Structure formats: C-alpha cells, structure tokens
Amino acid sequence: MHDWDSLAWLPEAAIAGAASGAFASAEHPTLVPVESSAAFLDAYQEARGRAFTDEERRLAWAASLWPAAHNARTEVLYGREPIALRALRDQADARLARR
Image (cartoon, rainbow, N blue to C red):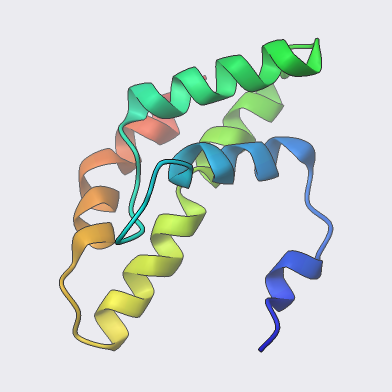
C-alpha cells in the first residue's frame, strides 16, 4: 500500500502544521490540545532559526486540522467512535482563528 498523499510537494509550513496537530497521538489518532500545537510550532520555528510569515502561520494552523479531518472521515465511513470528529468540532474554530 502506498501513501500517495505523502508524495506530493507541500510547503514547509503545511508539513509542520500537520505534524503539530497530530504529533502526540498514540493509540487513536486525534488532535492534540491547541496549546500543544502552539508549543510545537514555536519550537519548530526556533529550531529552524526563522519565524513563519503571517501567511505561513495561517497555513500551518489550517494544516494542523488535516490529519484529524482524514481520520474523522474514516470514522464516519466505517461507523467508528467519532474521536477525531469530536476533536475537529471542538478545536477547528480556535485553530483557524490563530495567527
């Protein structure tokens, strides 16, 4: 099986943002708390030696929802417990409002 989505080119901020939303998921993939994503993105920018631009920050926060959206789709399609779907409902507005 191939992960064809991973073969596409994505901006650095999108990759970091997606990782910031899912980096601490262990058993059932879902969103980490917003504060954890903020700490992840702050540490990432510090390690790269350059802060994201405003546009890159908006992109990173939007991308932080991608893994959870993918997992929520699977939950709905297969009638699984809506763990990621609940996290999306609870956190999407807060994440998209971040700058």
